[in-house]
Image 1 (cartoon, rainbow, N blue to C red):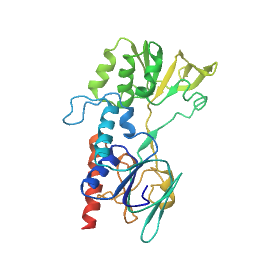
Image 2: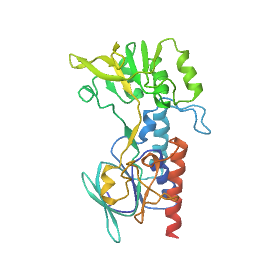
Image 3: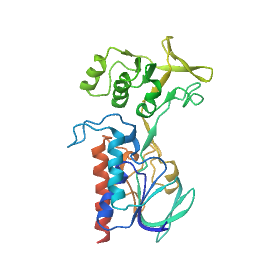
Image 4: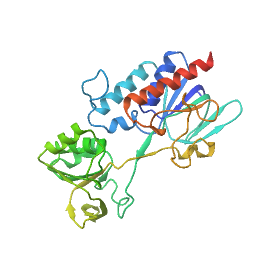
Length: 300
């Protein structure tokens, strides 16, 4: 693999892949680095109905269409984990677990990772009853009883998705009101096999024979479940960029200007690693295009 690139993009989510698409079509030598599967959070979304021009599509399908679009353009992908980034006067070095790469421009599009409750037995039961991806692990609980924790759009959407696979879904939210759209909440309440418990929260996971067996709620109630899915927010994946001084110490998101530039010349950020009002596919696409356009203008 080539060691030097005009632009390296860290993160092959929607924002990163959009930036790569625009840059490659403009003839830029670009590399995408991704440690997991292309698509980011999109591949963990069961159904997408608010992407303009597409009536309905599953998240993994949309992600793979974007990925195929880039491979058709022969955009190189490196499936590896970035460990550090170094900015020198004339170049930027990106160090992965396997090699050292050099570029003129760097785009950070690392997104966010699911927030955890941080309570007893959570780590111990991860992958043994506790999950953060319904579309990934939902089929494992077909015809079984599961719980969903959260009150935002993701929690409501995934509870609805799981209700089509599982015997019973119990949605637990710490408030009485939901952050999801009213249409989604109404759909949630229309399913006979979904029980909504509010206001309440999980304070302990109880295992049995190495797997999740029960949830203990703050109210004292105990629920017997086979699986539990947490959707309580996201944490930006920005830790490795702290030494550069571009990560906000309070929010932990990357600070950028209106052109999505960081305080360091030639280093940009886009997508869900930014602190913004709206986290949607369309906004991620927009940011990827804005970053690419700005880089192209800087070159002219």
